Length: 102
Image (cartoon, rainbow, N blue to C red; front, side, top):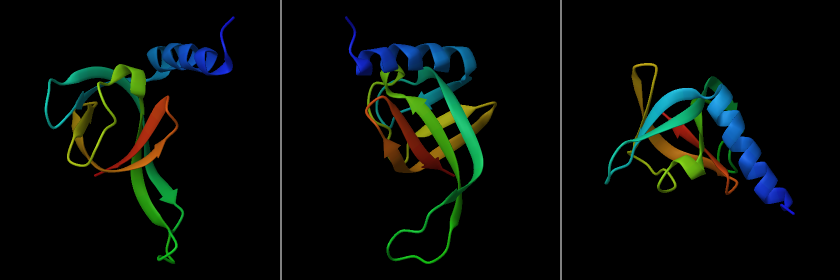
């Protein structure tokens, strides 16, 4: 019997492979990795405790099982001929990761 997390993981693999865009994740060290990604333009980010203004950003969602590590600042994701540089980690639920890119 598969637990809920295992079911989610296998469902996410099918979802990313079916609907994600062909992309390449390039870590700071190591070889580039072909993966699937979702890109969202002009996402409004809620202000943090110090800020009062809503920030707009481009967010890329990646499937952790397709990568060799959790993406970090300075690494890149290439999608549809455009290379985006990772600014910071936005969310990591252990199965997918969202990064803010420029």
